[in-house]
Image: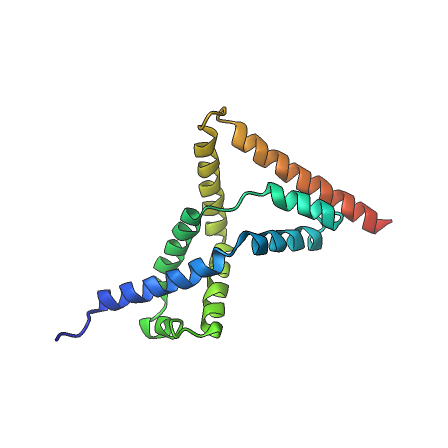
Length: 163
C-alpha cells in the first residue's frame, strides 16, 4: 500500500475546508433574515424593526454557486500562502478551527481585490437574470433603487439622532 501523495492530501483538505465554509454561509433563511434585520437596524439603514424587516425581505440571497466560487478563490490563495501543516490544523473538526477558518474567509472577502470581484460577480449574475424576460437594465435599476433607499433611510436615521 502506498502513502497518499501531496495532491491527494491537498484535495482532501480542500474538500473539508470547502464543506466547513459552505455550511457556515449556507445557513437557513430565518437566520439569514435575522442577520440582515440586525445589520440594517444597527447600521442605521432602517429606522425601526418593521422597516428592517421590509428591507431584509427585499434583499435576495446570494446563490450557493457564488459562495462556492469565492470559497474556491479563498482556498487557492490559502494553499498558495499557508504551509500545509498549518492548514491541517484548521481541519481538526473543532468549533474553534471552523470559526478561525470563517474569520480568515471573511477577511479575504473584505480585501479590496475581493470587493471588486464580488461586485463584478453580482453584476454579472444580475445581468444574467435580467435576460430572463426583462430588459437588460432591470436588475441594475432594482439594485440602484435598493442602494438609494438604504442610503436615504440611513440619512433619515442620522438626522433623527442629530436632533
